Image (tube, rainbow, N blue to C red; front, side, top):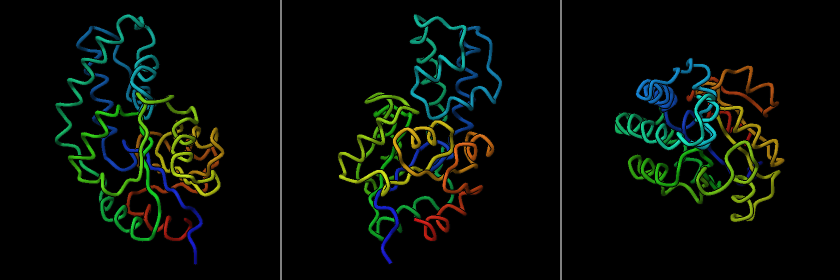
Length: 218
């Protein structure tokens, strides 16, 4: 039986890698460093998946744009201190290897910078599984559809043959904007109700449920 989809596009943070907590902690620590009001966890979590500039503008709305660079520098300092401790969610390596063997094209669409994505792809030794990727410093940030549109053009895949998999409303709204079906995962950054409100094909609640859902439905 042929696969329903040809291209599976994964978000990174909170979908493949258990990094949402480190991102929130780094945003909060950066604000403390600069004497800014520290955002609550829910507000800091909401920005996961956005490009850094958009994330800082939402998490710290009182910060003037002229100070984004200072806050971004502190964020990178704190996040990189956690970087070597971050791990993939259980089973992700085996899942990607299996999907590749089944003939899917695989890609990443992430709010990370290109340097940040390349660093984690090398550290996790997952680069071999992905046919392409898009990062927030290369094109429009989520939820703009550009990442998905560019990946589909590059890999010659139609929207109906593409599936976006992500843990935030930004991922799912990007899919809606690109006319692409989506699968939500609720074990990452955003609460389940905010994900299901965007009508994904499904919503899985643990990393262990992701591969069985894909085997059955993708």
